[in-house]
Length: 225
Picture 1: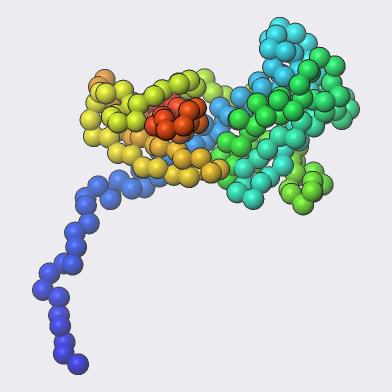
Picture 2: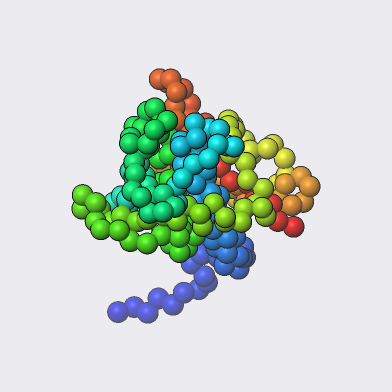
């Protein structure tokens, strides 16, 4: 057999690979902060359902049932427990007019509690008996509501811009897409025009009319110096 010795490297590795561990660290921290924000949002959604969005009204909910889907995301069933341990559902709670719609609205947020954010919600749950073949958890709403999100400049709102950098400013940006819970997510990482290191996460927004282009909804915005 002829010995063909290499005369040079077959390919070059970019020097930026040296920062890969930093990229992973930034992503992990951002997902933890995102998980805390979503856990608080779930607790807030339960409050809003039980009070009819009257934030000053009294309500009684301490734990929420969540079931795990095949992709690892958590989904609310509408079952919850009061502070004295009484089991209730949205359907049996006076003042909740459309329990099915309420569960659907709550499940706009709950599935963000998945394997990528389990370091946040894992300590907040205890296991329940299996529900229709699916793992079930009891989420402590009091603990979820008390999670610290003050250090996270979080923005949840519409942001429609598919064709350029989200804010049209800064440079040195990198991006990648990832499927999480059957949703396409777009992650940006770089520096804005003010020089702040920035991490942004976008979820593809539902297409509201046939033939429309997809748009992105900003769900996480983290600045570090």
